[in-house]
Amino acid sequence: MKAEFLVRRGVLAIAFAGLFAGGASAQSQDATPQQQDLENDKKDIRNDKKDLAKDRSDRQADQRDINHDKSDLSKDRVDRNADQRDINHDRADLNKDRTDRNKDQRDINKDKSQLASDAHKYGANSTQAQADRQDLHADRVDRNKDQRDINHDRTDLNKDRTDRNADQRDINKDKKDLSRDRQDRNKDQKDINKDKKDLHKDRKDLRHDKRGR
Image (tube, rainbow, N blue to C red; front, side, top):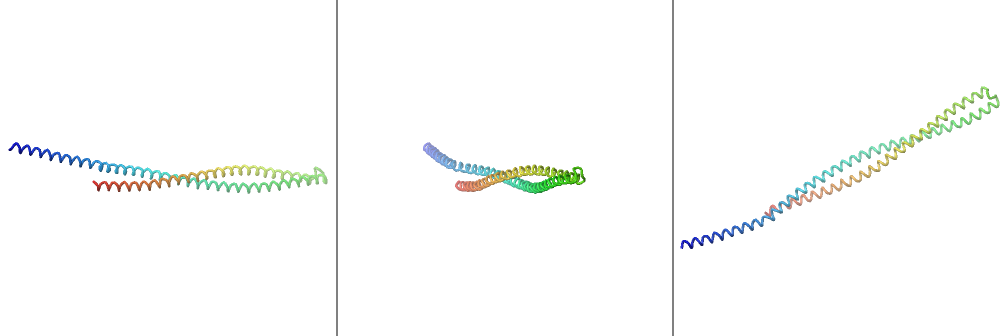
């Protein structure tokens, strides 16, 4: 009788052990997918933070490029405007020197005519003819000086036009760079906004999975 009792007790013990083992196994199997979800959520959050930090860094770099482009654009515009003022000044000098040169040429022509007349009337070595020659020489000196000024003004004008055109090309390039950097900055801002949404969603998923444990 005692032996039978011991056998029954052993059988019951084995049965209870099997039930506990099955329950623990089921509980372990149930917990594995949930634990995996939590790990995935945490991994997604870490990736979102990395993406967010990278996009913010890119956005800040683009903003620095934009500020640099604005500075270059402003400087090139100042240079272009200064060159244009130089061009305007060169044109005014050129016009004035041409006017002076033309006046000197008219004086030379008049001196030649006067010299011919006085030489014919008073003689080639007369006082009047000698005075005419002095006037003719002085007017030729002035005419030659004005011509040198004209040549110099032309050189300055060509140089200033070259500088102005180079500055205008720089301005056009700066505008393109500025537009491109603004597009990059705006794209990075969109990425940042998307990263924030992803981060918010993944944090929400993590809270939901924790409550479901």
